[in-house]
Length: 273
Ligand SMILES: C[S@@+](CC[C@H](N)C(=O)[O-])C[C@H]1O[C@@H](n2cnc3c(N)ncnc32)[C@H](O)[C@@H]1O
Image 1 (cartoon, rainbow, N blue to C red):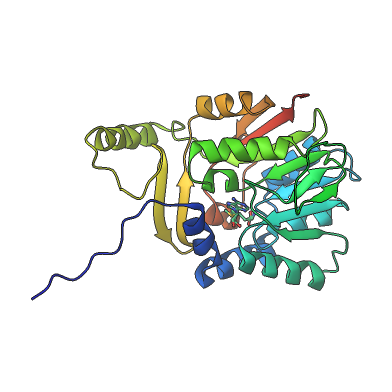
Image 2 (image 1 turned 180 degrees about the vertical axis):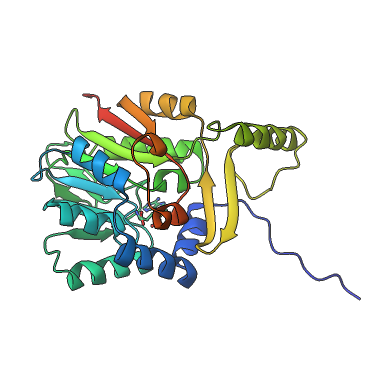
């Protein structure tokens, strides 16, 4: 009898990640959080500190179903452009902002690695791009940047954000830190041995990647080291201002801890060109 066919073990791409976020399991998970959970205490504190001007034009990347987008609106930010490449999640975000009367939030389905936007004063000719005033701040919350497979593409995204913001604009984002605890350091030591033997999950792109399934559906996530992010910021036009683990910012509710693991917040500033 013929052997049952094993599922394809092809390398994860942006298309894999987008399909996973468009999956109904993920859509329900993120829509529920957008409707019921809202901003974490740590997010609220760091957003208010990073963006003191409520009139500032803000670019939010990886907005998902609008959890942070709506949180920004509720804090009084009125000039927010939010983008995500998962059409189903953008549809959820649109429905949520309409339901809550959050008028003026500009929601776009777009890929953060090549945004269809160009700054008004940028002489570059970019076809099919909308000209926009430069953003005075940007956010990529809840590890969205780390869900872009491949370090080169994550760096490209940081450059993309940089080309759309004013000099010195703050960028607030989060990542995991795979060296944060002793347990993690041990686990990643074992994983390093697997990579050295060539026995890692063949779907992974870089060391530090994970691809797993839980109540949020299938998730691709790159878990960086702190040094890796400092290097990525330095070569993409950003200066790291501070970074801090979430537990040192605020004690989160059980609901927030259920929804999200510990993470590191980063605040970087755009260097002039
Ligand atoms: C962990 S979810 C966070 C969603 C939302 N910000 C929240 O906190 O609930 C990460 C989001 O990043 C989006 N994302 C990942 N890669 C992206 C890309 N290349 N361009 C645009 N969005 C992307 C995903 O579609 C997903 O909605």
